[in-house]
Image 1 (cartoon, one colour):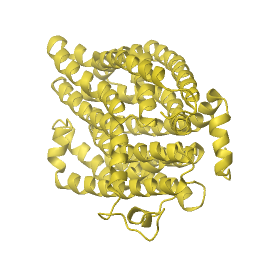
Image 2 (cartoon, rainbow, N blue to C red):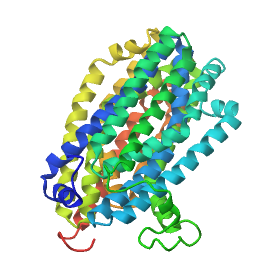
Image 3 (cartoon, rainbow, N blue to C red):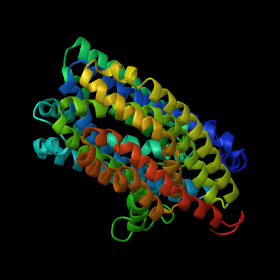
Length: 467
């Protein structure tokens, strides 16, 4: 899509381009973005793992903190983006600007609060996240810089998602790729050259996230997007400039952002809680178990991001066409996304299962880490095929504003199924139960999602009629 497209040209593109072609056009830049983001997360794990098993475990511990920060970014980003996509489909750009500005305003506030609370309760927070005594000092070093960057990390998540919902995935890709490349080189320079250890990895991640956020926000101030970021519109109704919102803010708009973004908060928040429980469950088996499960999480995340990127290309297509009342395109885009993602992840799962031991060895040449990580990676490679069902279904409901169903489905994989599964299986099967818990939760999440999606697609009216 050309950066100078008019609203009418964009409307025709979003409503007339064959859905499979459109999903890929919007999804491929996002896939590159997600791949690079995952690669630099893996780069952190790779460089830090070379320092020792306890240092490697610290990355896994702080990953739960990063998930909390991202949870708020995704909540405000998806909540605003879903509304913006449907508003642009209905040609209402002024209200779209209000949604973008309001989400950024409240997102920055949440980021500052996370920073303040994190520094105030650093030690108990590290214990809560699953640190052992040997991991604790390294986790604090890493978390220090992550907390400093929290406001801009939230901002980056918000603007990235709004850009995607506007169909500007290329801009989102540029921002994330720039930050990712900077992080990889930063890891090498700060850890290997300056010998700053785990603190260097945290510093590299924080700097790269801040740079990415700055790049991602630029299109909103240079006329490259239809929505804008204007803090004036947070307090003033842009459709009636002479009026202030009653009660200072447009609380109905804030409520809509939170309601629709709640599935993302739920998904990421439960992911953080699940990581804490996973680390705590693995703690009795030593730093090697925490390190191994952290490595597997990063590897599975890398495999899954291929399907996730295509799914994120589906979101603006679904939201825009739902707002334009072209429901047949919503259905066809969903079917294409699901099948395409399942094929890609089926191939990735086979690769992960066959080469599990070699993959884990790339990160940590520790026999205990390798043994635990290989078993866990094989379990999760088998279940990888069910992830597109859960995530694509969740994206469908979130993009079309069905927040209750989206929130419930978002809670299944990392919460409703994973938490009780790991708590039960660790008592029954010990370490093996911990290794296979996520795979079982993925299977249950996929099976639960199917009837919700089938019912929703059947309920959609003919094109042109109100939903």
